[in-house]
Image (tube, rainbow, N blue to C red; front, side):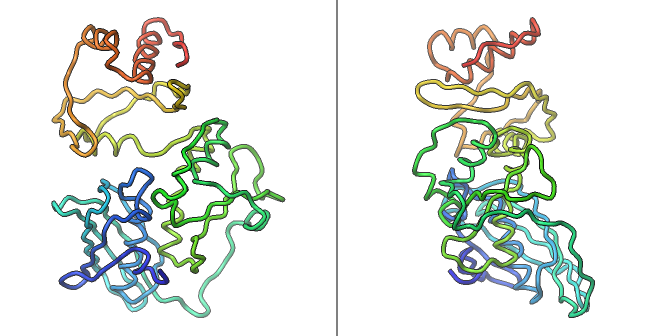
Length: 316
C-alpha cells in the first residue's frame, strides 16, 4: 500500500469528484466501526486528487460511524478555485445516504520562497528503535493516566492499530516540562513515508492525548454517541463523576453524565437491541433480579446517594 489511494482503498466513482471505499479493519476503530482518522485522511486524499494540489489544511466533522464492510461514498468539490489556492468541500455518506462526515479545507501550490517559520521546538527523545513499543495507544495512555488494566492481546491486530506502530520514547528534554506531557512515536508498520493524508490519520490520536493530560482515559465522545445510538440531538450534559473498579475479573473505568431529553428517540439497531422507560422502583426490582450490569448498578446507586446526601457512593 504505497499510495494514499492504496492505503485507504479509494476507488473512483461515477461522476466528477466521486469516490468510494469500504470500512476495512485498518480503517476502523478497535470496535470495527469507521475510524475518525480515516474520514479526515480520505478528505485530504480526495481533495488533493480532485484539485491536483497539496493539502494546506482540512477540518472534518465526524458525524456518525459505520460498521465493518460498509461502503462509504465520497463527494469532493472545489467550491472556489483560485490561481494558487482552492477551497474544497468533502462529504462522506453511507449506503442509505446518511452523512458520515463533512469536511472543509484548502489545497494549494507552495511558493518556492514563501514565508516560513518555526513555531514550536520539539522535545528531545530517544529514537523509535530505543523506545517502548505499545500494543495499542490505549495501553500506554491508560498507564500514563494512572489506570492499571489488563488489555486483551488481540488489540495488536484490531482496527487502525493493525497498520500503526506506537512507541513511547524516553524524554531527554522537553520545551514545556510538567505534568500531562507524553511523547509518542507513531509510524506505519510497513514504513511507507507519511503523506499529509496519513499524517491526519495518525493525528486522530490527539483527542485521546488531551484526555490523558486531564488524567482521564477516554475512548470516544459522549454527545455524538448520544445522537448516534439514541437519536438525541442538541443535548445538554451534566458531568457527574469519574469511576473505576473491577468486577468479574474485568477492569472498568468511565465517566457518568446526567442528561434530560424529551425525544424523539431513534435507537441504532447495530448497537442498541431495544429500549424502554422504567420507574425507579421498577429499576430497583430489575437490579434485585440480577438483570443489570454491576457498573450500571454502581453508577445509579452512587448518583442517587450523592444527590440525596452529597456523599460519594462506594467503589465497585
